Length: 460
Image 1 (spheres, rainbow, N blue to C red):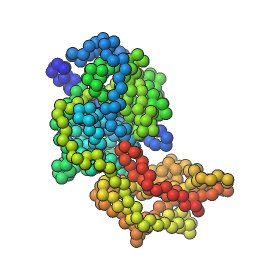
Image 2 (tube, helix red, strand yellow):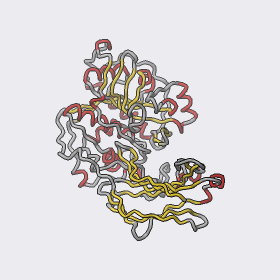
Image 3 (cartoon, rainbow, N blue to C red):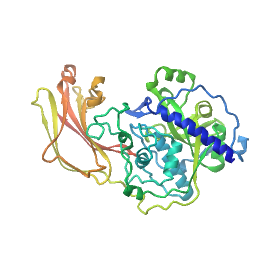
Image 4 (cartoon, helix red, strand yellow):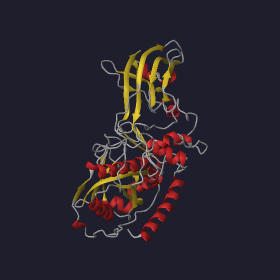
């Protein structure tokens, strides 16, 4: 690519990214799918750009009929991941692109740690430090400083839950410490473990669907793009995503359902003028974590420049780079239920949990019920929105423990207490219903999402 063009694109990206960073002072809306919520980056309204036309990189053939009519690069992708409730999509798209570059160049399947990249970018470099969001372009450059492995730096969900360092802060407040989002900068010892990634080349491309397809068809590279999302335009069952002026008008009046999102394009169909893409909302979203969108979505609403990345030299990986991540261990688990308190129903837990890695463990007690004649306690009690932060969407009490600093949680002598106020249960629910507490233990994995270790019902 012409050096003057590269300099111009970098200037434009720096300018637009600085504006994006200012927008990141606020949160975007949330996308909901199968009971899970995904934080979007702040919504940026912009009118449709209209077709860019055949704006091509230097050296690419403008006639698309000379390229393969279909391209599928899924074989060069690593497993689909799940970003959880954090607005960390741009870290996941950058990592997915880097993992694909490694697999394409040397055949290795590597699970790069998004958590380490977040700690590096936000905690050490101070980039996008005041919230969860970021820009994939800068994340890729941070990866060139060296990356950590998921087995050494497991992904963590946000720290604003009970039992975690930022439980007393509001994640939307400007007074909230940056460490609540960065999860602290990596130590010097942790930085020494980082794997050298000097051979990663990063290329900003001209912003048109035709140019993206031509680049992909020529070099077999996946591409990172950023797009506006209206949750009504993204079908989690089919994976089909679209955006138009009707959805844009909805976003102008209801930003709670809209935001920005970063994904990886993994193929195209020139006849239908569609791209396939890899998402970061788990394997049960779309078609095993993949979706489809049109060329017009890119040409009208693309945010910033598309980004390609490839390797120029082999990465030296440790022999155990793909070793399994050990799950937490639960020992001597016992419980008792206190029903004598007139205000609270309390579950007392005794036992020990150990974990050599930096997982966050969630322990929850959820009120459930079943109708007469039903076999399962599968009914949950919704909570008044003003109590949602403390007791969840459904009536529950939970405790979270971060094993990043400590390796053991011992509640053998003093019980861990999870309490639910009777006042929130409601007499209507109590009438002629059989009640039970659902005791759950789970942790979060970037490739598996929420992993339940224990799910037990305690009849009342």
